[in-house]
Image 1 (cartoon, protein in one colour):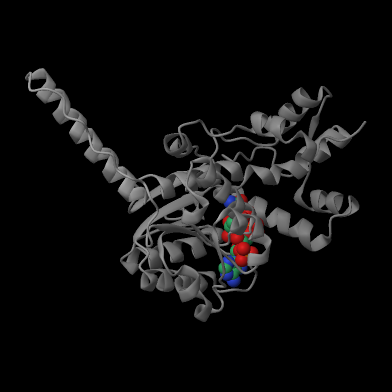
Image 2 (cartoon, helix red, strand yellow):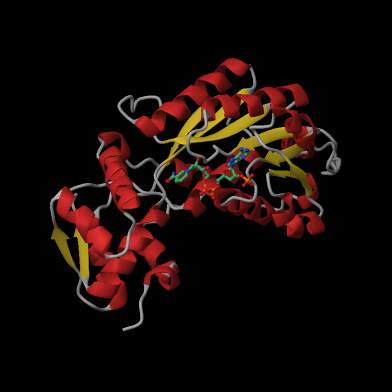
Amino acid sequence: MLEQRFQGFTRGMKWRCLALLLAMAGLGAVSAPVYAAAAEDGEKIIITGASGQLGRLVVEELLARQVPAADLILVSRSPDELENYAEMGASVRFGDFTQPASLPAAFAGGRRMLLISISGMGLDRPAMHKNAIDAAKQAGVVQIAYTSYVNADRNTQSLLAQDHRRTEMILEQSGVAWTFLRNQIYMNGQLAAAREAAGSGTLTTWQPDLKVAYVTREDCAAAAAAVLATPGHDNTAYNITGPQAVGAVELGRAVALLSGRPVAVEAMTQEVYIQHQIDAGVPERAARGGVGLGQELDSLWLAQPDSAVGRLTGRPATGLYEFLATQRAAWETAQ
Ligand SMILES: NC(=O)c1ccc[n+]([C@@H]2O[C@H](COP(=O)([O-])OP(=O)(O)OC[C@H]3O[C@@H](n4cnc5c(N)ncnc54)[C@H](OP(=O)(O)O)[C@@H]3O)[C@@H](O)[C@H]2O)c1
């Protein structure tokens, strides 16, 4: 339907130009035909992982773009959690990439697809994504947008990038038109540190100089909705990032400005930081995992902002201060 709308728009433009030329030539008015934008089978948008945090935001963004709920196929391992969208007319279906037999029925009738990278420790994620890509191709899907990782093609040192690059290669070789949404690390992950800073007046870190162009999950969803609902994104990769690289200093400053209370940034060694986290109630495994992620983030490939969010959505990517201002309930503490 979206392609039809676009074609209808360009055909309408041709008629309007013709009418203008004829009017200028004094040959009278010609009225442009009206093209219906009715949904047709085979023109529907599939969202996988639709009950996840990103999946739900993408559904909301598509609805806000006036995509009818009836044009959406929402695939999840927990379709019951999407009952509200079923009531609006969306087709809500069970699908699990670890159960390939579930996928033909899940994807039947879909035209475009957002393949949300799966979570899950110990899974061969690219192999699971391949199950989804193969089934989508078999079902007649012509475009797959995949939520990848920022600079996945160039960040060869990154462990996180490896699964995404392997999936990108599988998708490139599938013959289906691809769009890579190379999402930066979510800014939403900074809320815990903001809460600590607001509560104690101190922001502890073992990486005082680290800067990352974090992006909000909400902006990732808006960018994904744009590539699904507008033409021109076939075989294109986008780095989906925030507007600038920020770190502990910027986070502390934003919390201080918004809360009206001073925040000091306290740098410590890695081991002291881990112990500090454990003393604050974080399980040791999680504390060490957080440090591991910090090492992953210490890369120039994560510090570079990109303008793709603005180009795709028509509004600038959300900055750290603005994000914290809209998420006060998640980090402000009673004094
Ligand atoms: N950029 C970042 O900072 C960042 C951080 C964390 C994760 N990620 C990646 O981005 C993805 C989306 O993020 P999120 O915030 O929405 O994460 P989330 O809320 O944890 O959602 C996880 C998603 O994975 C899907 N999934 C898990 N196992 C699956 C399976 N076997 N078959 C099909 N789908 C499966 C879930 O779908 P259902 O439950 O609906 O089946 C859900 O949509 C994550 O899965 C992860 O790959 C990125």
